[in-house]
Length: 355
Ligand code: ADP
Ligand code: MG
Image (cartoon, rainbow, N blue to C red; front, top):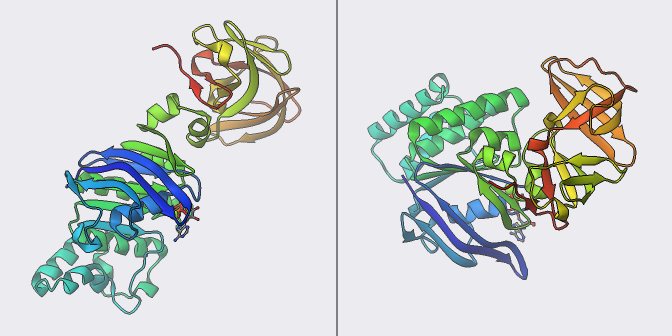
């Protein structure tokens, strides 16, 4: 398998730099997820690793060997796309084994590899079908089978599940997690879906506008986002962020409410307070930090989502486990769980708790 290094890798299209000085060390067998909004450079980075796109500047190494100028097929990397890209006139078995056919591997070997991959992916009964007679999920499995058969040193996935419906996406996500456990291969997985990122990744790389914002484990990013962008990109529902003025041992909101955050250093430099919907408590009248009026209440059974408005602050979202008997129009007292508060400086940088 493979250790992958990106040293100061940049990409320009003409005068436009779409990736800037990317530095990343990926360990052997690691599952790395690249996330970020559309257009931030995720696919471009994968395509450079696969060799489908030249690297403008910097070095790309596999197991210590520079690969910038190695031909795609000699990189020993398999890529799975969102669009499956199956050959319509070939049946499932031939689609999966086609790379071995091109390499002129013996037919017997090819047959046994195809059978093995089909078994792994639950496609054994479908090897003689044409792609047009398959569901979206089955086509995506064939595309994965085609990658597995090559025994690559690394797998690259570019939003492989985006074309599937929600239920199938969850199922395929689990399958990819199992595949990684079974093969122990290095995987780089691109998605704009932060739930996929949080559930699959050993480490997540958050990209925005061609720059790495943060690299860390899912919990690292959730608990200690480096800046407001990461804080709001990771975690669902999205973190609430409100403008505040920093004080000595806490912050003051625009409507004059003071929230004590004695354990946080540097409160004086705070420009914004971040608090996740699950870290706001609904407490008895007068006991909370913020008085809010419930706008919309969603009873999901397992959770209650409460969208509130706070005069002088704006809309916030609260999420609580179980059923909270709140109704639209109710006045609610909300308490900020101080140990889960995040503070951001004016430039969006997180002000860290002393640890
Ligand atoms: P993502 O996959 O994160 O949505 P991409 O890597 O596809 O983003 O694209 C990153 C940026 O590079 C975008 O602004 C896109 O318009 C630009 N880009 C991608 N491919 C080309 C190309 N062949 N020529 C010019 N610009 C491109
Ligand atoms: Mg893309």
